[in-house]
Length: 104
Image (cartoon, rainbow, N blue to C red; front, top):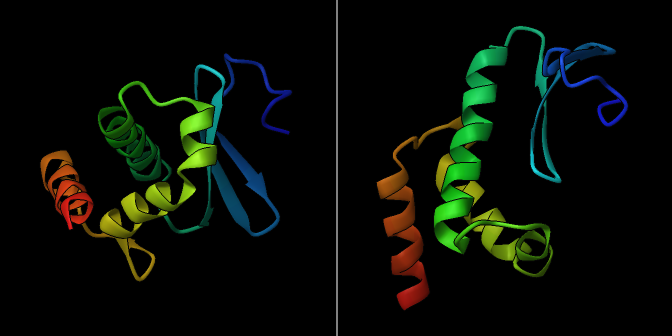
């Protein structure tokens, strides 16, 4: 459904009892399935922050970075999300935690 949508349409879809929030960066699609009561715009900002952190960590992230370093992608998400809620929004803090984990 997402790939076939026109670029001029919104980045939000309703699917059953949930909302789909997505954003496209070059050839990569980042998609979240959220509850009806969650803020679509906040989730769109979360996707953007996630991509910015990926870009800084990998240096212009691409599909191969995500495929061959999926454990790092999950580690980045673990730094940002706790218990299903976004807890850290500072790129500096997230990247510092990743550097510290890489060091040890």
